[in-house]
Each structure stands twice: as C-alpha cells, then as structure tokens.
Amino acid sequence: MALQRNWFKKLSNTDLISITSFFQEVFTTSYIPEDWKHSIIVPNPKPKKDKTKINSYRPIALASVFSKLFERILIQCITHHLLTEKKIPPSVNGFLPLRDNQLAVYKIHTAISEAHSHKKYFIGISLDIKSAYDTVYIDGLIFKCLQLGITGNITKALHNFLQNRTLQVRWRNSLSRTKPVQKGLPQGSVVSPILFVCFLADFSETLDVGVEYSIFDDDIFIFCAHTSLDHISKKLQNKMENVYKWCNYWKLIISPEKCSIADLSKRKLQSIPRITYAGLPLPWKQTMKYLGMNFSKTNQNGVILKHTRFKALREINALKSIAYKNYGPRTKDLLNIANNSICSLFYYSCSITNKFSETKYKACNSVQTMALRVALGLPKWTPNIVLMKIAGQEVLSEKKLEVSGAVLYQATCQRCSFSHL
Image (cartoon, rainbow, N blue to C red; front, side):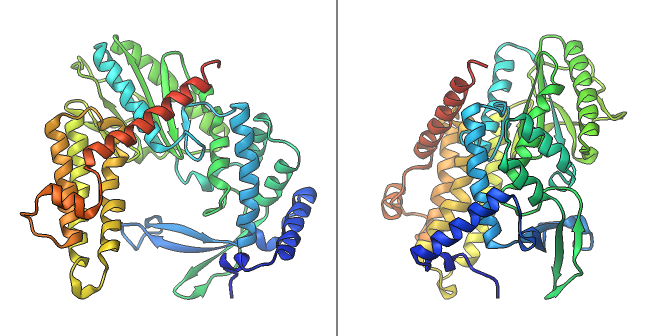
C-alpha cells in the first residue's frame, strides 16, 4: 500500500523531527535512496488524439512521497538563489514568482501593440521543443546550474537524483519490467520544471540585436519589429541559425511540425520572407497561438474574444449536461465549476483584453450570466442584477479589470527588478 500525504499530518512532533533529520542527512551526504529514483508511469490519453499511437498519451508519474517532500526542499533553496541573485532573464517565464503565463502573454501583446502604434512590421516565430523534459542533457544541466551559482550539496543531490533512475509503466492493472532511464528530467517530478527553467536560462546567447523572445516551459516565441522587412528577415534567419546550433550543442530537438511563422503587423507584406530552420522553411500561418491565446494580423481583440467565447460556450454546454437535479450536484458545486472552468477563461486573458470596447465587455458579461443561470437553475428572464446578487459575484468585466491590474503590477515589479541589468 502506497504512503499517502495525509499520513504526515497525523505524526507527532518527535516523528517529524526524525524525518527532518533524515532529510538533512540525505542533503549532507547527497545519497538519494533508490526508491526515490523509481517512478511508475501511467499513460493518460490526450483529448482528440488517436489512442493507437504512443504520442497520443501524456505520461503521469507516480513517485515516492518522501521524494517529493525532499524535492520541495531543494526547490525552496534553488528558487531563493535564483530570485535574490536575479540569474534568470526576464524573458524566461514560468515556475518562479512574477513569471506566470499571463505575464508572458501580456509581454507579447504589448510588443505587438507598440509595433502597430509605430507602424512597424512585426514577424513572430513559434517554436516547440520536442519531448522537452525527456531530452534534457543531465551533465549539461548540472553544468548550467554551476554557472548560475547553484553549487555545493544542492548540485550533488540533484546530480545523484537525476542519475540511474528507473521506471515501470502501469497499463490495465499490469506493470511492465523495470527500465533504466539514462537521460531527461523525471516526468511528474516536483523539481523538474524549475530545473528546465535553469536549462533554458542561457537561451539569450542566441539573440541578435533587435530580436526578442519569450519562453514558457517548452514554448518559445521569437519576434522582431522594424520598419524594414528585409532587416527583419535577415535578423530572424540569423536567429534561427543560432538556435539550431544552440539546440545541437545542448542536445535538444525542435519539432518542425509544431513550428510556425506569422505576420502580426498592420502593414501589408510586399513579399513573404523565406525563413528556414535546419534547412526547412517555416510554414506561414494567419494566426499565431501562444500559451492558449490566438494573435492575429487584423482585429486582434475580436479574434481573442471569439476564441475565448467559443471555449466558454463549449464548457457551458458541458455544464448543462450535469446541472440536472437528478444527477445530484449541489448548487455550490455548480457555481464553482462555472467560475473555475468558464469565467476563468476570461480572467486568463484579462491582461490583454482590459482595453475592450463596451460592446465586447457586454459579450463577456453575457457568457457569465449564461453560466450562472445554468448553475443556479434560474430562467432566462431573471434580471442580471438579481442573478449576480443570488450568486454573490461581481460582474465579469469589473472583475477582469481587478485581475488585469494585478498582472500589470507584476509586470512593473519585474521591470523594476531588472532595470539595472
């Protein structure tokens, strides 16, 4: 029987001190128990994918609870060092304070808006690292950790934790034979995301003057804005060559089928530049998707609203199927579902939709009232004021302004913290 997390809550202070002493011994000696380096992989099918193909499954790793607790201790040490020393460039987002996906999307939207206001061309390239965590070069990762100033017992413990790992695959209540893992970060590990951030910290070495980028996990967005299209073409092509050399050196692979290039400016292209990666031309797209948000050449706010409303209405239809009283869900649970799965879609995009017109805000509010009527079981003719009073919620457009203000505050804090660099 596997050890559950609630087991720790029932321990006495004496037992907790003993466990803490054990963690300290592991940290001091850098010896990682073999059980901590073993994972059981449970394949989880991806939605709308062919289940007969192995790539259509997302691996979910089950690991020791003690291992995850120890990883969280390492994360605290690593995160504190990276934040105090400002080792991670501001363009590398994710898994650090003030580095969430909303802020990454806001930066891209701001860059596009500035290009529009200055009547510049804006070309963006989306790259995706193939099997990102599985292809990480462990010795290269440790070398980069040392360059970032992560030294001593932390580096030794990380190196021993990542080496000589084993795994088994659970499928239909059966376990496969134990297989050794020679490379890559463990799937489902608590410490893997922050280590991947460290691994991509030196991606800025591939930069050319005038070319910017944004990274969140394994999604890379490269862009360049200028009044000359030839200038952008040369800069981006040189950038792609540098990225190719960097990936080869650190043994990473870019998925060509997931790469794309798009013109997101308001100016008309006189000719379509040919940008290649590894000798293959990047496919041109009408829209660019980054972290779930669609950026378009024209009517950008309209495209974002249309895409968000489509996903929200699809969630409302799913909510209708479980909102019948015979199924037994309580009104409180239905309200939580409406807030977390429907209204949250608009909160996620609030950093770039806070300048919507009044008409577009009304379109957002109508989705919220529709979801609340389904959750509360109220008729369509219920006044919105009464509906919001019963639900005890704010109007979506007003709540979006509050959340967008928090995102702007994060962007300002990050800009100030790196102003001296």
